[in-house]
Amino acid sequence: MPGPLPYLSADDLSSLAAVDALERALLGGLDVDADPPRTSLPVGDGELLVMPSSLSAVKLVSIGGDPRIQGVCVVFDPNTLAPVALVDGISLTNVRTAAVSALAVRWLAVPGARRALIFGRGPQGAAHALALRAVAPTLEVVDVVGREGGAAARDAIESYDLICCCTTSREPLFDGARVADEATVVAIGSHEPDAREVDGALAGRATVVVESRATALREAGDVILAVGEGALREDALVELADVVRGDVAVDRAAGPVFFKSTGMAWEDAVVASAVVAGA
Image 1 (cartoon, rainbow, N blue to C red):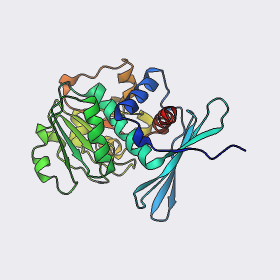
Image 2: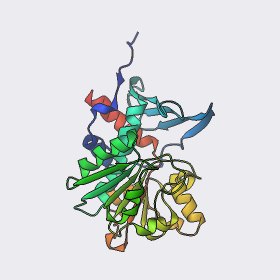
Image 3: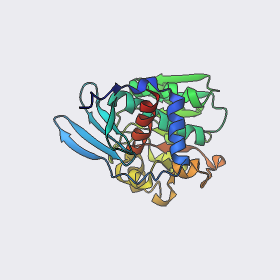
C-alpha cells in the first residue's frame, strides 16, 4: 500500500517564486475560466469552500473559524491522477493571495513606487508586505494599519503609490476620489457580492483589472456594487491575463489602476504544485 501523503507548507516557497509560477502559467496560455466556480456551503458560523482545478488540485477551506481560514489542498499527479501531497490551506492561501496581488503590481504599477500602504494587520497584511517588496524593490516605506486605526493613513491616502486592502471590511476603507492618479490599488478582502473595500469613486475613475470578468461579476462586491451604482461598466473590465500576455496595454496616464482579486482555484493549484516541486 502507498505510504502517507507528505504534508507541506507553502511558507517555504518564496514570494518571488510564487509570483513567477503564476506568471508562467498565464504566459503559457492558461484559460483562467476553465475551472468550475467555487462551491460554498454554510457550516456553523462560517462556510466551507470547495475549489477544484483542472490543473490537478483541489482546495478545501473553511472560513469563519479560529483561525479564520483553515483547510488543505490535495495535489494529484497529472499523469497517474494519484494524490501526491497535501499542502496546508492556511499557508497556501496567504502565499497565493499575496502572490496574485504582487503579480498585478508587477504588471500594472508605475515603475519606481516608493510608498505602500496596507490595510490589515493579519496574516494577509504580513504576506502582502513581503510580496510587494519582492516585486517593487524601490519601496522605501510600507505602512501597515488596522482597519479601524488607519485614520492618519486615510488622511494621507494621496501620498501612496501602492495601496493594498486586506481586511474583512464590508464597507469602503477610504475615499477613492483622493487616490493619486499614479497609484495602484489592490483589494483582496472578500469574495462576496455585497461586500467591498473600495468605493465607486475609485472604480469609476480607475482602470479596473480582474482575474476573470465572469468571476468578478459573480463574486466581487467591489465590482458588482460599482456597476450597480453606474460608476463602472461591465465591458470596461480588463483581465490580468490579457495584460500579462501583452494583449491589452493599460494606459497609466489615464488615472489610477484598481486590481480586484477574489481568488481562483487555478492560482491555488499553480502555487501548490510549485510547493510540491520544490519539496
